[in-house]
Amino acid sequence: MRILLFLLLMSGLTYQTQGQEMYDLHPCGTVLGRSPWLINYQANPHLFARRTGETLYVPLTIHIVGNNDGSNFYREQNLVQALCTLNADFAPSGIQFYVSGQIRYIRSTEYSSHSTIHKGAEMMFKYNVPNTINTYFVGNASSFCGYNLPYAGIAISQNCAKPSDHTWAHEIGHHFAIPHPFLGWEGGVSWNGSVAHNYNNPAPEKVLYDYTLFKNEYYPDTLIIDTAWVERLDGSNCAFAADGFCDTHPDYLYQRWQCSTARRSNTVQTDPAGEKFSSDASLIMSYAFDQCSAVFTPQQMDAMRAYLTDVRYYYLGDYTPPAAPSTETIRYLRPAENSTVFFRNVTLEWEPVENATAYLIQISTSQNFGIILADTIVYEHQATFESLRNNTTLHWRVKPLNSYHSCTDFSGRSFFSTSSVSHTKETDLQYSFSVYPTLVHNNTPVRVSNRSGKAASVQVSDMYGRQLYTTDYGDENLILDCKDWMNGMYILRVEQQGWSQSFKILIAR
Ligand SMILES: [Zn+2]
Image (cartoon, rainbow, N blue to C red; front, side, top):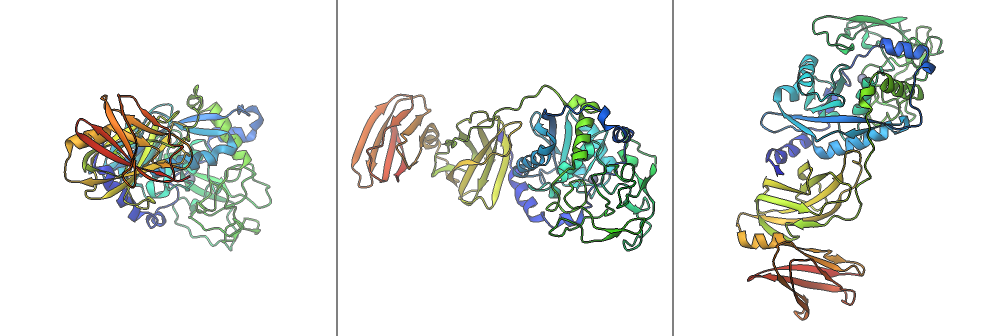
């Protein structure tokens, strides 16, 4: 596995731009009407199967779209956490998502910052993988946080895909036929935002909206305008007004809004009968800020399960989630901890983790991983970086993952330094041996792994240079029982064919 330099470039760039751009993006480009299916379902929900009581597993294809020069790719650390948030958001509904296949990377400035939804549709038609939900993480999704094209897939701007954002859940809600609770208001009271509305005045009975691009098929050159009934506070028209769900209450707020501590809107609105109300900020399908929203309503969840079973049944294959990756601390094999390596073509290797099929690797200049030079997902227990920052101490750590489990923690860490001096032979030797653990808190034996395929000798001495232990051994691993060793620092020296390498072991019980 060879990691290109562009991965190192990209992480710093996205860091600097996060936060600010989010406020320039419109919340969601999806103007999803009540589909004929949803109208039919809401009239007779009991006629639809929901496969109640069983978890429905849905496959995702992840596309990360960056610029031609390799910059502006979505950070994979964020992706891993966004997946974790997505499954948490959907857990109450019994719908869960898993990553199908490997993550796909698209180098295309044209698609990464696309200015129209038509361009996004073109990208999806070109790259979609059938029978999965295709999600494209881009630099800028037509100036929206995200949108869902029912016939194609989902695009999300990377600044709205931070670890605790709910944009992904919101767009998948649309993908499962759920409209906004303020359906019809997407362009204000008129379909194109041309009519001003004062929320102190009673709302009209009906509003107009343009949902041209969000029908079940692609209509590139037709304008489709529809009307929606405005929902009243007394619930009298909730079954057909706005989204048609009676457990989502009136909401006319079509721009991003901040919530009160009680998770309500600060803007008071007036329904057509003159009744005043504030909106529910807890709904993922509303435009409340991400820290306000957290839930789908029971009726929305029922409808999503029914839609998945009835219409998007082709997502529901024969998937059984794998067990979670082992939480045992990972052993970092090479570069040996605290060693110095040539800064080019550096291979990082660790022992495979049970039940892991992928790993997120992070490299940082600091022990607390505050500044990340690289984070990337690989599918082997090693990765080669073409070029790392020279003359630097680099800390690295690994998070084991599989298709379903992404909420795992990083496991252990190691560090090494880079230099422009190439010590080919010493480097070969140090790649061949590893010692674990080097910090002993209990009576765990210390293991010296020898992957050179040749015999070596090992000596252990204390800080005063007194030799405690010496042995020759073959190409197997050596287990050192150190329970009789006193607390303190020891030096373990491996020798092979005239070369040697030292490791520090600290006993601190
Ligand atoms: Zn939306």
